[in-house]
Length: 310
Image (tube, rainbow, N blue to C red):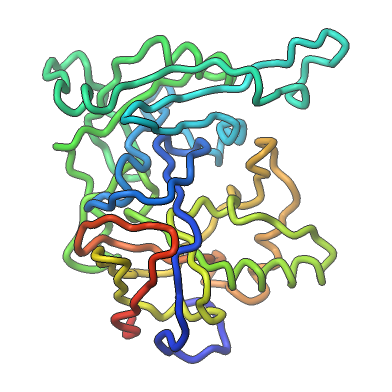
């Protein structure tokens, strides 16, 4: 638990979902729907796709910050992965600063067809690594591989986690363990607008610029929670979906990457978080959630805090 002067307590005010964020491709930009279904692995389709290197190990913004500029969105059950291209203006230098979102190269995958006609031949799969876990993932998109490798300036292969894949949350997140996607640790990440406002105040006092919530790549952002209140939640309900809060999220250097430029900034917000949200050698921001009951959740839904006995 991070250092905090706030005592454990459950919500006494109305807390609502402020925004939802789905990241179909791990490490890439996602999209923000008004409503979205939740299943055991989290927000549906969240981080079910991933890029791996030549050894099968996962690629993330930790080692490839430019991945932030790749976008994956879903409409009508079609996932579109797009990369910005260099501006067609010869008067501008051809550097990353010349990248514009108006010019895109893209690749589409029909998710319905993928779910109903998942290949069974062994050659369609690759053994991939995500942290300490190894799984068989579908790898059948050479055109996407070429597009993404060219943009990222490194060999990258697009892989997908089929529905029948088993990858369980770590035992230290509590029992029962739940299936998880290619997310780092848990099916969902929840953050609070109150916590971000407090962090930004501290950043500005320290002489750093305020940052947007996209630095933390949360799935569910809530409004109306008291400061640090979410550190103590252990069970909550949003609409008909139920969640177990397992632990505060330990943050890495990804939170120092500007998600609009794909570039590392200063050591903040890590340095400032370390002054009041330290956890051993790490800092924390946000909460990991496991799904206890599936359902549909929407922006504006109220949160019911069922337990604060973490």
